[in-house]
Image (tube, helix red, strand yellow):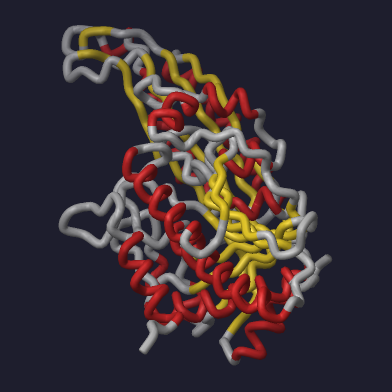
Amino acid sequence: MGVSHEEAFLDDWSALSAFGAVAGTTGVDRQAATEPDGEQRRWLDALLTSEGFTVHRDAIGNQFALCELVPGAPYVLTGSHLDSQPTAGRFDGAYGVLASAHAAIRTACSLRETGEATRNIAVVNWFNEEGSRFKPSMMGSSVFTGKLSLEDALATVDRHGVTVREALEGIGERGDAVAPEVASYLEIHVEQGRAMAENGITIGLVEATWGAHKFEIRVTGEQAHSGSALMRDRRDALLAASRLVVAARDLVERFPEGMLHTAVGELHVYPNSPVVVASEARLLLDLRSESAEVLAAATAALMAEMERIAAKDRVGIEIVAEHAWDRNPYGEAGLALARSVASEMGLPHARVLTIAGHDSTNMKDIAPTVMLFVPSVDGVSHNVNEYTTDADLLAGVEATTEVLRRLVCGALS
């Protein structure tokens, strides 16, 4: 007796979840172009090659598995990302890649028999979506869509001075393949919020991405003895950076509840010695909102706070890099297609927003795009305790398979 589609997916999901596993937890640590990332990439290569797909890498390390059903036709691209945050959950990104891989395998098998295909199929694993090791996030899809130059991306360094080029070549994942021509794009992801689980929604039809504005900020002061330097003489970079952290949180209170999310997720201090007043601090600060007006007002307020803090603490504060995107809707035709599939399958569904960015944020600007969600239990994300039930994982694979089949047969053409 053969293995069912459901059993095959869950077996592969168990195997994929072992790469970069964090001991004593169900989480993973497989940041972009690290050895665990290379291991899972090679595993995915073997899985899809065994099903007749041809796997290539492009110059920024995006991994494409191609199945040609109609010679010369463009491709329906489906996937997400395998890289993770440090000590992260195993679902974020990786579920979308494996769900797409299984959907592609099933779709290719059925359409080879029926001859209904008008498009080819490609599964993609985007490089460095998370942006935890190399900045910015969504790097691979940004290069693919022309929003970031290849050379700038390859020259980006991590905190140890290793470039993207060096890291990719170190794990054998930098290629020279020409990216496939894309007819449409499909991505599925865990929600990374709790609204779907709380409202009994199995398939989320993503209608828009929240806007975001991310800043890399450098604060410069003057190094001094932390004991003997007079308080009035100090130009403490860490003190000013700390005020920025608090200011970012306080910005939320200026707007209606739920309209603005802010965070400082990374802070580096120099010289980071217990007896030295810090001369430099670098931090990453981000603002997110579904409202362009709120995002603009919050950005203006942040700039004013930066000026006030710089004057108060007698430090320099400069923005050394920025990365932003606007609230941008997904196409109504794609939403209608996904809604039709979920309805016919009897899966509870609803239109939802995504606060987090995804590679589809880039792809929807160049091709008709469908973005689907499955629920996250308690909304836990970027955390080893992230969890989605097997039933919801399998429902998502089924929905992805049918949406993919319709796309390959010409929907959204």
